Amino acid sequence: MGHDVEKLRGEACVRGFAGFEMGASISLRLTNTHRRNSSMNVAGILRGTTRPEEAIVISAHWDHFGIGEKENGDSIYNGAVDNSTSMAWALEIGEAFSSMKKRPQRSVILFFPTAEEQGLIGSSWFVANPPVKQENLIACFNNDLLLPIGRMKDVMVTGYGQSELDDLLADAARKQDRYILPDPNPESGMYFRSDHFPFARAGVPALFARGNCDSREYGREWAAEQENDFIRNRYHKPADNYYPEMNFDGIAEDARAILDVAFTLVTSDVRPGWKPGSEFANIK
Image (cartoon, rainbow, N blue to C red; front, top):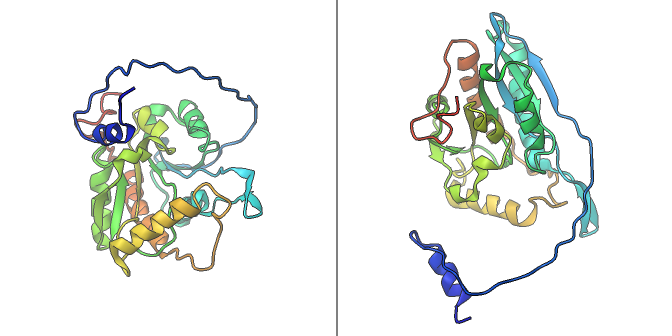
C-alpha cells in the first residue's frame, strides 16, 4: 500500500499527527464466550457522631484472577501487590479511625470492591447504590498496586490537578518531609483504570496517591527498576506472590499521609471541590 508502518508509528507519537484514509479494508471474525458470575463487594461503615449522613470512602479492590493459565507450573494468581498491599493500607486506615477515642463527625466507609479487573464493576455498582446519598459522599481515597519497596520521598498523584484533595495531601506530605509528584506516565490512563474513577465520574472528588518513584534509600533510578521489574515479570501473573524481601514501611507512611487528609475531612466541615479545568468539575 506504499506505507511504512514503523515510520507512521513514529509520526503518530508526535503532537499534531492527523489520521488519513489508507485506501484499504479488512474483514475479520471473532469468537467469544459469555459467562455469568456472582461476586460481592465488601464494606464496613464507622458512623459519624454529628453528621453520619456524610461520608468519606477508603477503597481498595479485593479481586484478582484466581486460577488461570499456568506459568512455570503455577496457576494461582495470588495478587500480592495487585491488590493485597492496598487492602492492608485501607485496613490500617480503618483501624486507626476505629481506635480513636473521639469518633469522627462524618462517617468513614471502608470499601473493598469486587470485579475491578473486569472493568470497575463493583465500584460502579457501589457509586450507583451508596449507603449514604451520593451527594453526601465527600471524597474517595483509593489505592492500587502499592509496591512494597520501602519509604519514598515522593507522593505520586495519579490524576494530579483534578481536585482540592491535592492541596490537602501536599500539607500532609510536607509533614513527612516528602513532595508531591504528578504521575510521570499519565498516558497509561491509570486515573481511569482503578476504583476511584466511578466516584470521580459521579462528581465525587477522588484521590489516587502513593509513594512510587523516588526511594529515600536508593533514589529514583532504583525505584523505576523495581516498578518495571514488577510490570514485566509479576503484574497479572502467578508470580505476584508474597516474598520475604518486601518492605512495607513506605506503604505505612502512605497510610499515615492519607489518614491525615481523611481526618481533616471527617472532623470538620471542609468539603473539597474540583479544580477549574477538571473534566469532572461540572458534574455536580
